[in-house]
Structure formats: structure tokens, C-alpha cells
Length: 99
Length: 341
Image 1 (cartoon, each protein chain N blue to C red):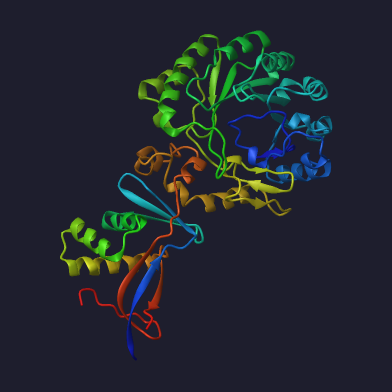
Image 2 (cartoon, rainbow over the protein chains, first blue to last red):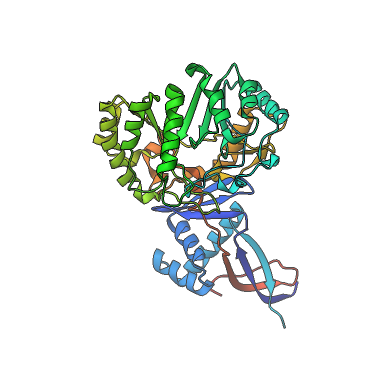
């Protein structure tokens, strides 16, 4: 199968809303009537997503927060985004680059 | 518990009103008042739910043109009427005839048409109504600012023979609406003032009843002892009230109107409506009005709900979160990015 450069886009569904409490984030999925409590690095990453940082900046901040190498931080971020997707907190789409 | 909204018209214009989004203003438009046959259906709903108390709210319920007939249809149950206290003569005469054991009229003493609070005329008219209702009247007060003054209520109870209690409510925010409400950060100041007043009230034999939305931490431990000593009815609760509208819409409560509403159908009773609202609201109830609420032991033990759910829900937000992770993707869209490569 031929590969092209592209990107995976993670977005928060319209049905989700969240708040930040003292040391964690609570995300409510109104469609599923469910709530998820995010703690530790998960809460940090969600808060950074909420600040609309781009991928490069996210990797940089995750690296600083968790004392990881850049490659480890990138993997950690990707694994976290995928976990959020499995929980229904994010939706994932794939976009191929044009040209 | 369930409240029947019998009028969406109101003769007041309170800045703190949390029903204003459902109200239609004062007029003689018959669509603003519950038809008797619909009222009877709602009485049947209360009966099949095992609810013995009939609570009439508005708007202003007493301006319903057929208010005496509503009361007549509800006879045999304990009737509770929530009013601004500016009650038309025909409704007042009807309530006066009720034995006090069968009727409670909760008079919101700071309801007003004026932006700067009740004027002398409103106060005089309300006092006259309370005197005629005597022990049927239970005075209420909605706190929406820290500079409230409850002392005139003690005087009114003393001269009117109204029930020796005052029902205190905290003005709560309407979701997506614009009403004046008490900011949670001001609760401790209000708590301190309530304690001071409770001690004075107790000396007059008057006790305080706290409505929903209060939180335990707005009172210190010593303050709580003082309140208990003063005989106050304390509670740190927020649960579905079930406000039933003219058109059969059931609201969790007025401040949350529009978010979890459902319809009253002949097969529904209050238990099932409670289940509906509890299922829909439970995800939001992990949090409370303060950032510390979700980790508070009292909340986790169920002793305090963490304040009004409408104030909590307003803390939640949605933003357009979007992050693009670069990588290699197949033409079919199966991604294969490898971090670090």
C-alpha cells in the first residue's frame, strides 16, 4: 500500500465539556452521560490541548514536565492521545497532505 | 417533591429571578395560565407518584384568573403556594379560608418590580397580605448580595403572627441566562452574616430554614454549632426538584432549565423522572462549585453536594480542541506515524 505524508488530527467532540479542579481535570461526555477524571500527566496534556498548543509545542512541554527524551515524550503524547480517543474524549481523523 | 408551574406570568421583575427565562411577563393572556384540565392531569401525576403536597409556583401563581378553582381542585392535600406576596384579593380571600394545617404560603419578601429593591408601597402591601395570612405565611428571602438585611423580617413575623421561621435561599445562576446571583466566592461572607442573624432570630423564637444550594464550608465549625444551637434547619443539598411546566415540560429545576428537560407523559411518575435527571446529571456532579469540591471528603461521603448544580455546570466549558500529529499515512487513511523517525 502506497504511503504519503499526512497527519492525524485529534479533536474534542462537541458533546464534551470539561473543567479544571485543584489537581485534576474532569471531562464530561454528554452523549454517553459519562465523566472521566484525568490526573497526573493526562491532566497536564489535556490542559495543554485546551490551550490550543500545536504538536511541536506539546511534545516540548510534555518532555519538560516528565523528564523524558524528545522521542519518549512524542511517544507518550501519542499514546495519551490514543487513550483519550479510546475513552471517547477525542475523535481521530487522518488527513493526507495535498500534492 | 414537585412544583407545578401554574402561571408563567409574573407581577414582579426580580433581578435575581431564576425562572425568568420561562416567564412571559404579566398580562391576561390565557396561554400564560394553566388550564384546569391540564392542572387536573398534573394532580394525577402527583397522585401516582405518592406526593401528597401540592406546590404551586410561577411566575406568580396567585394571579391565575382561576386560582380559587385550582385551590379547590387541590383540596384535601397540603397546599404550598410560592408568592411574591402581592396577592390579588380574590386569591387572598381564598387562602385565608384555608386551615393553617392545610396551607403554607411562602412569601418571597424581597421580590420586587424595581431594580433597587422593594419600595415602601410594595413593602406595605406585602405586610398587609402577610398579616391576613397569619400563621399560613412563611417568610422567604433570596440572598443575591452580601449586604442583605433580614431584621425587618423579624419585625414582620412579630406583628403578623406569621410562622416563626424564615426560609433563606441563595440566588443561583440561570444557565445561559442573565440574572443576578450570588458568586460562590462570597458564600463565606454570607455565611458569617447568616450566623449573626440566626442568633438574633433565635432570641425572638424564629428559626432559619436553608433552601438548596448552600455548602457546608461557607460556615466554620463554631458557626455551625451556633446555627444548630439557634435551631436552624441546615442542609447542603442539590437534587432534582421537578418543576412541571404548563406544557408538560419537566425541568430538573429552573436554574438548569434547557439542559436536561423532559416531557411529562401519563406513564411517568416522580421516581422515574428522578432517575432520568439523576442519570443525566451524575457526570457533572463529580465536581462542585469550587475547585476543591471534587476532592472534599464531605462531598465524597454525600454530606454536601458541592452547591447548586447550575453553578457547577457553568464551570464546565467546551473549546475547539484540535491537534495535528504529523506522520506517514496510507492513501486509505490508515496512519503509520512513528514518533522520532
